[in-house]
Image 1 (cartoon, rainbow, N blue to C red):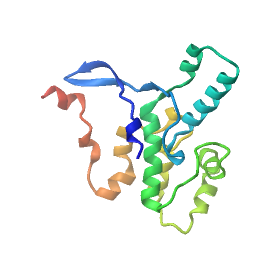
Image 2: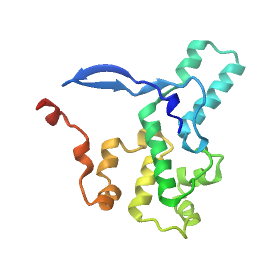
Image 3: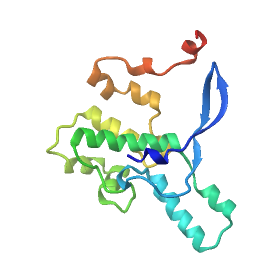
Image 4: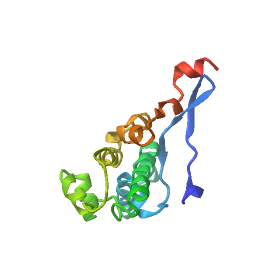
Length: 173
């Protein structure tokens, strides 16, 4: 695990004694296992490399290195879910040059799943994995949507939504 490299998110305000965090962080260096890194991190690496070669200002390079850490973690969770369920990695790196990720990120998802045809996977597993491994971070499910997804509801037979504290519950504290 690469938890030694975790970044503390900046609190932007506090409601009902629970802080709200700014999910946008700056990537200063490449860490982590390749298969778990979200596609936006690889894009940042490439853009930063290009800017270094063009001797761009440090301010411009800092702007390019910003990403949504929560959405990136959701992507990493997708890879973890896949590996726990199927016992191997879905792709080497989440870049369009990777033949497996290219199928998953594009319109040929059926071809991606055909590769794993011998593995037992439900339609709800495939749906969840596809929705949390989206190429565009803003298209990935939120944590609340993940907890409500059919795959998790089927697996446990219970409602995970109680884990998320809504404003209604926090006002009672």
